[in-house]
Image (cartoon, rainbow, N blue to C red; front, side, top):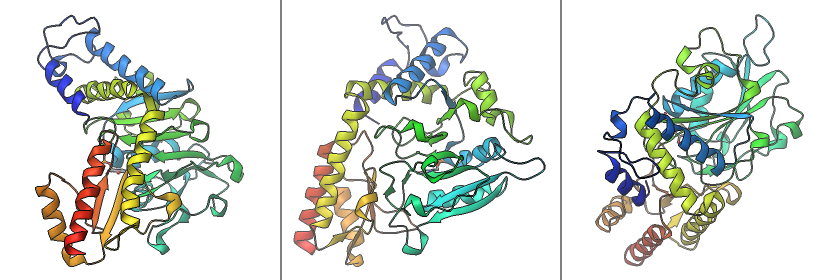
Length: 362
Ligand code: PMP
């Protein structure tokens, strides 16, 4: 979270001021979600996000709950029947580029007939299979990708063009750990979803951006609160939305606008990632195995050639104020997450520490 946003939320916690600065006598957590104050907060957050991400008018912005993992079920519950023939299970295709797309694939099998269109697993998830090699089924309702694999550090730097592949399937994108770090090519997207807790705000809010023509095809077993059509028809207020998380996300969207919008934040993210990858590639102690064309700007996994130094590396980092650098348990090593709120100075501090550590232990 950007420091400025946390400070603003702290100032407003007990008594929220409206846009004119007039205090309303209660904090956001105490408001009815149908009251005029919260309705204004929610409408502002949605409008700012639409501007920031240049979301076209024919896409709905939904504020939901359940996080990325719930969406792994909610997406097939809503979209798998899009192109299904009567009496047949809908077909859903997946491109596997790491743990998160694998999880999506497994969950969708409960509700649809799944198929792996391409996979980077044999190489250990260090590359994204070239789009022209994808084997997308003719009857697939959608193709699911994870645009940034948070654990493996593999990122799509352009979204695939399914039309160019001759497919009418909708593209579904899990952009949990990429959203708001760079522009989105909406003309290629059917639906994008993401938990808020990386770049948007606190956990509890899930963002869904969905093309209007994909609504209205939910399976009969789809829970009403997870039916995109119902959620959209009720302006994300079918059930009580995660009000405080929406308010905080709105403050983050305002902050992003003040930084110069997505183009400016993307330039910063590129600079941050370059600084760290250069330090890794230029060292003889650290390495990253991901192919250069799909290295993530958000999550940089790296390993020490001498793994017995891992504990010493983490201990020294913590005493230098550099926290949460341990890699995900499934891959080991280290991982630096460079989300929007991480300043360039934070990455420079990490690089300085890594170089000092290499000088003493290398
Ligand atoms: N997808 C991606 C790309 C993620 O990084 C995560 C969480 N790290 C998830 C899905 C799961 O999200 P949640 O914990 O919000 O269910």
